[in-house]
Length: 174
Image 1 (tube, rainbow, N blue to C red):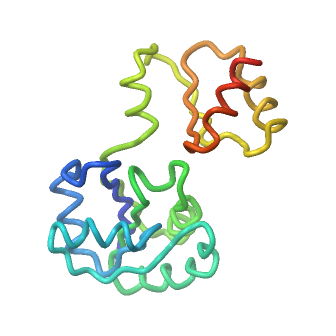
Image 2 (cartoon, one colour; image 1 turned 120 degrees about the vertical axis):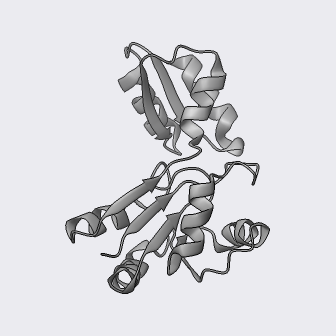
Image 3 (cartoon, rainbow, N blue to C red; image 1 turned 90 degrees about the vertical axis):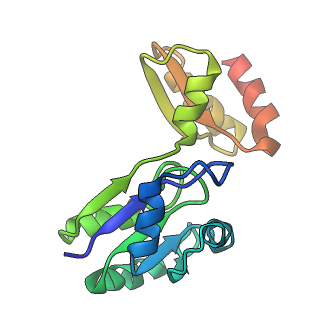
């Protein structure tokens, strides 16, 4: 039965990819990639010739039916820009749709920015809450931060470089 493989890709260094991930990317019929340009660099580096289609936030609903159709013909790998698909990346909807249709979904583990950030932060790792990306607007950001302020454990958030200072200011206010 055709399978959807959820393949983690390197966060920064292209050598941070597993042998299993490379084999999977070579053997599937199609790779659904968040950013085809970035994924192409990975594929060229490892001489992988598998066809690729884009699957990102702006086209995920139009590509969903196409990728599900491809899954009727053979295996598909889902990859994000970096790290694990579905974690602060598109992919969740495809994974759910495949599961609902009885298509096996198999994770190919590897890097995850949230876990890597937690591990190297020096903060406690026994219990943590993952928030993902903070809201763009200060009011929404503060509201979210206030809702988790009393959590016991480390709180992991993601933020873009150009919004980092504003986010840190809001963390200090809460």
